[in-house]
Amino acid sequence: MFPIMSLDARLVVFVHGYRDDAETWRFVRARLEGMGLATLAIKLCQAGLGQESAQILDHYAMQVLSEIGKVAPTKRFLIVGHSMGAQVAELAASQLPPKRLAGLVLVTPAPLAGYALPEAEYARFAASARQTNPANIEAAWRALSPNAGDAGIAELVRATLNTSEAFALEQLRAWTGGHPAGQMSFPLNVPVLIIAAEQDFFFTKRLIRDTILPRFRNPAFEIIDESGHWAHVENPRLLAMAISRFASRLSVEF
Image 1: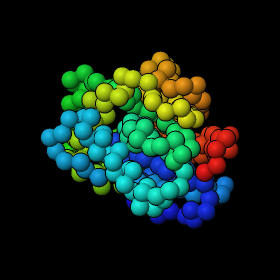
Image 2: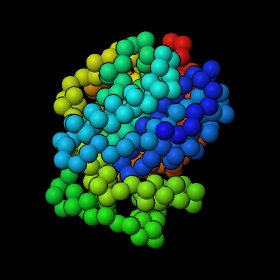
Image 3: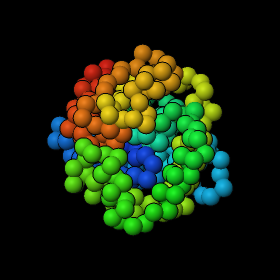
Image 4: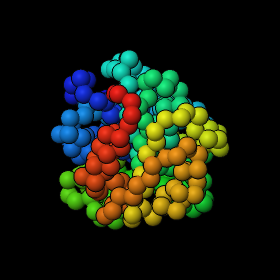
């Protein structure tokens, strides 16, 4: 769990995605904290080998709820998830009473129902999970996230190196396999913001519009310019502004 500022302010909780960690949210968190919001970034831990994707995602969601319960057991909050973390954030949110949840933000989200990869592509992801050479990892991140800059690339490389092979492979099973809840509409009537990235060629704007937006009631939708899939690292200024605008429009106090 990444440190939290004063809980007197409105609270925004962050959930990271595949081969990422809590600290890579720091660029967005610093901007939101400068706007007067409190933030909490949660680091997911390995659930255990041999579990099905739905079990893994449920376990991650339980971790999120447990960490929030330790820090802010009664406070209403806004929860933000990126990629696989969006799957986890949605599952965690769906288990909360409405009085606890101010809203849900999904950033370049993986579909909760899963995203099945062709066998060869899955094998490439699995091979990358075994990569431990920092130079090779940095080169891969620079190709994937050309907008990130040196500081952002350093964060992504650090997070990747700190994710064990077993944990990375477990996460891969989780986000590709998904959860049955993704076949149904989101059960709560709460404000939702879904964010795509202009240069995300994996979970594209069209994919998000066609497969994710229809599961929610009247979701807001924004597109982050000059960013690929890792918007929290590639364009944290615009992402923080989008989250702040959404938070300021919420009719509930949190």
